[in-house]
Image 1 (spheres, rainbow, N blue to C red):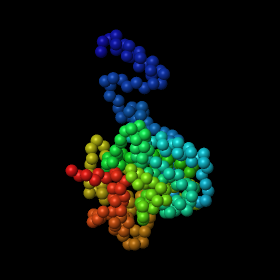
Image 2: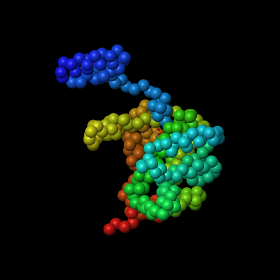
Image 3: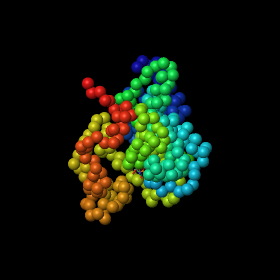
Image 4: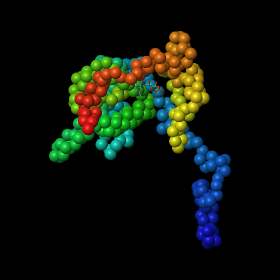
Length: 296
Ligand SMILES: Cc1cc2nc3c(=O)[nH]c(=O)nc-3n(C[C@H](O)[C@H](O)[C@H](O)COP(=O)(O)O)c2cc1C
């Protein structure tokens, strides 16, 4: 650096420092303490607080209704979620009839938002302009699913920020799924009900907030690192620790299991075995046209 440039740089830095700005000094490595001072952990602002306050109401919603203006705010927010090519490849069906909600997903609250991966609107737009648009493969379903899930989580955050509670549920996939198409008159092709959100107020506050695994095995830096034996033992212990609230319930203790995960894999998730035959969901996915039928 020439003396002139050096002086200019120095003067600029001093001015910036006087104005309270922190400009990294080129070529000079900061100590860890300095790094921390210039990069303190961000304060829990309102958005972060809302995210930390997210929690599920597992169906015990009371009779209180959310207002139409609150619902509109949630709908305005849900569609703000990021989405592939801004094509919004989903449809949201708003259901206020509690009996219908119960039939559709097994739960009821003030309002149900049923999210479908849906390409019908785009297909119709293409057709109206004389184009043929054919999103009939698994890639489009996955992209549509991602768009839909992001919209769902955004609705949950918006609801919680307004003091409204939610249940995200795949109850729509239990039992006779065909019924969903029939009740809501969904298009048989290029439309698939993915997930539902029940909105409302709880009849009882949850006793605690569910915990989360955060470290090794969940978050990997720079490359994937399979959990080690020690880490797996630590994870098992975390699930067993009643203060962490990682488990769905305490039934495993009453049933005499050694660990929560014993109960989870043996009782709760016992159906997660290799499938021997086509599931009803795969049949419906094929009918929707999202599963590639030609393999060669
Ligand atoms: C795809 C999906 C399906 C879910 N289905 C149900 C459900 O049918 N019933 C229920 O009570 N909770 C359901 N949940 C909520 C989870 O059980 C809940 O998010 C999890 O236990 C963590 O609790 P928290 O959201 O309170 O932190 C579902 C969540 C997701 C993402």
